[in-house]
Length: 170
Image 1 (spheres, helix red, strand yellow):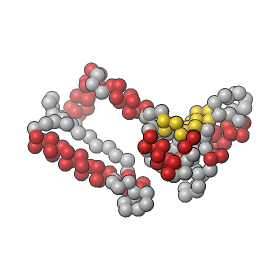
Image 2 (cartoon, one colour):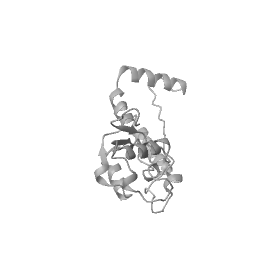
Image 3 (cartoon, helix red, strand yellow):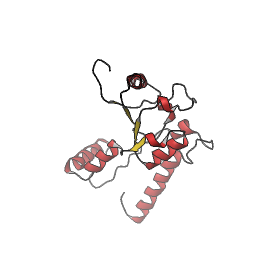
Image 4 (cartoon, helix red, strand yellow):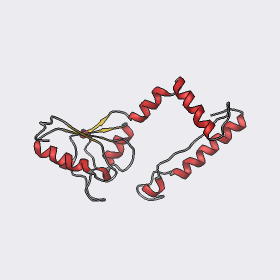
């Protein structure tokens, strides 16, 4: 960093502190401003502490943490992050998805994927992906979200059943 005369360091954030934590420490020692980009609504503290369960220390955090939305800000503040370091910037993957939904390219790709799974023209293929919330946050514990991936899947299946009964497609 010193040899390159860096004027700003931008890092990602690993699940557990990875190589970026060393880069952030080096930048701090050199007085180079730092920005870390958060990409998910989970494991906030684990991305910035050296040992799980350790308290968040402001002096070890980047100058600015780019977060997805106000929900992430609220959760991070509850975990001990200083509000002044959190900046809402959106979530790039969701922004990109919103731009492509409905495009001709997206429609063609969606149809090709549907054919791979045996879906025919006019049928709706529903795919469900989830973070492993129960293993990460538990159930009925202090950190539990009040729902987990299984609750979400049940809710999705119920909604699809209602749509099917109404003759609608998702």
